[in-house]
Length: 160
Image (cartoon, rainbow, N blue to C red; front, top):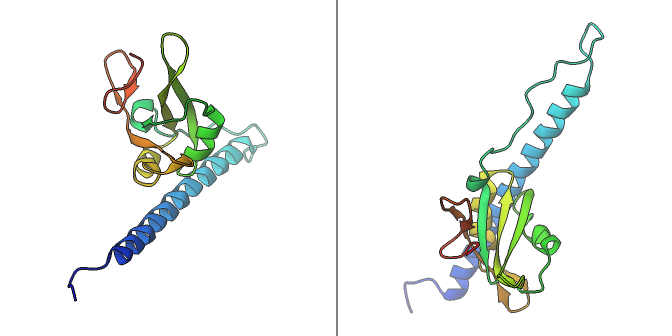
């Protein structure tokens, strides 16, 4: 008998940790969404003297899209932006989906997903990397790295 845990035990432990991390990320996202709704409601209410409410600074998420983006590889060539938005919104609100194309306008199989919060990037890399978008199509997900031209990539993709 071995002193090492079985593969099934390791997989079970990893699945439980991933599920717990996913739930924690989703709770954070829900909390941020509720805070944004509450701020918008307060901004619409009149103040005590009956005049319009003072407008608070707009509730903002991370302003830097570079910090809130993931680079995705192995995207099926017939995948749609709405399909990707639905898949990646599992870890947080998606603000942009960009599918890269070659010079002839054909999909290259990679793209960029931008979130409202940087925390969603961590969730996407940990929870969605290696997941199937469709059967037998496992996505590669890494934090986006932007060059001087503003194009994003993960490790050798982008617009070029």
